[in-house]
Each structure stands twice: as C-alpha cells, then as structure tokens.
Length: 289
Image (cartoon, rainbow, N blue to C red; front, top):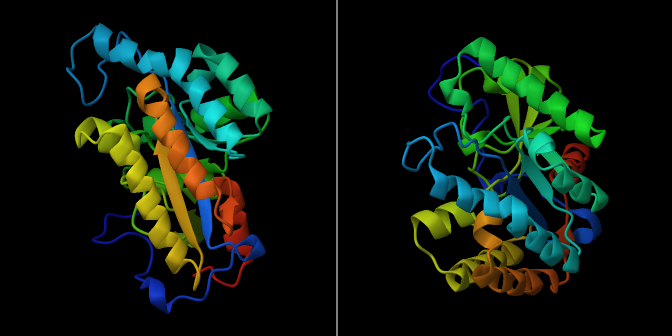
C-alpha cells in the first residue's frame, strides 16, 4: 500500500456492525497462538544486549524448543485446543521434531518470518518479498500445506508487506492488534482479513516487560474472558492468547496457564478454533465488513 495516515480499512465502531454469529452460537472464539521461533547465535537477538554471541539470551530461548514447547503441547491438548503456530520457517530445519508433533496434533501454521533475529522492517523491498515467499514455501514443504495466515516477527511491517502477503496467497494477517473481531482490509482492491491478535494476553510483553507474575497473567486471561464472554452474548468475539514456549513453558508458570485455560474451556459457548477456521467462518458470514 502507499504511505498513508491510516490503515487500509474503514473505521467501524464495534457496536454498529452486523451481529457476528460463531458456530453453535458460541460467544467467544478462543484462538491460541504459540510463537515457535528460532534464534541465531551468530546474529544479534532483537531487544536484548545486541552482543554476538549472547549465550544467555540464546540459551533462554532455546529452552523453549528443547523443553517448554512440549509442556505447552500437553496443556493445550488436555483442553482440546488446536493451536495456530506463528512459525519461523527455519524451525523446520532446526527443530523438525516440533513440526512433526504439531502436525500430529493438527495444529495450524502461519508464517512468522524465516528467523526471529531478522525483522521485515529492516529489509529492503526485494529482500522482504523473498523472505515472505521463502517462509511460506518452506513451511508448505515441511507440513504439506501452504500457510494462509501471517504474523510478522515483532509484528513489524513495511508499506509493502500487505501487498506481498496478498500476492503470495495469504488470506489473513495478525499484525494489527486493534479489534476484538475480524475485519476486512482493502489491499489495492483485494481482500485481506485482519484477525485479532494480542499484545495484552501475550506472555512476552506481560511477563518480560511488565514483570507480571504467572498468577497475574492467568488472572488477566480470566478477566479478559469474562468481559468478552459477556459481550459475546450480543455479537461474537475473538479471544487471542499469544504464548512463547521459553516463557510460559517453564516449570513455575505452566500450571498457572493450565488453570486459566481450564477456566475458559469449561464455559459453554466457547469455540476452540484455529485462525483459518475463524477467518473462513467470518468470510462466509453476513458480518464481513
């Protein structure tokens, strides 16, 4: 898109929209997104020391792939949640066992750059297009299905990102954390759905930046759900929970997360959905705006 003062979508107050009806009249579509990422020891890791090598920063994150992700898989499976993985495509080569198990669990994969040490907004246009194309192609080769969704590493975009995503066949993007329902973007006359992702119920900013405890993060999940569940009685809502295996997958946090998810999933009227399922249902409804 061209540089502009607002995003490529119209302003729409949530209370003025057509009623959004989820399957079985669910009030809330619960969307859980594990960010399964890979970091390079010989590159600078964003938002930490900037030194190379940074053994501590690298090791903390590698713990998520070696240990933490398997705890998350166990907890989500217990609740019957099929997650949508925000996947760095280099995970396919670095940690193929994770790809295999996530596939066995019938999780969805969406593109999330090649590596989490490189952001789209630091790449020149021709390099950005290559990163997006190669990410989607590598994930397709590893999983047998081309991703239809995208979450940029660090939620970063350039003026060209949405155009490249549409060109590569993506149907939805999760970078725009400005709603509790999906909505349509107009990308040079083509449709792209913005799906509600979250910086609020996201363990990285909540726990690492805001210093929330595991219990406080679990309480945030419950409170967010209570409000969305109440509002969802009149029109469906999406509740996204973003997780990082090296944060929520550690021993002293996993049980608090499990308890919060149990609380949500024991309510009637909760649709446990993947991103693609949410987008497909939204586009087939009369609520797409």
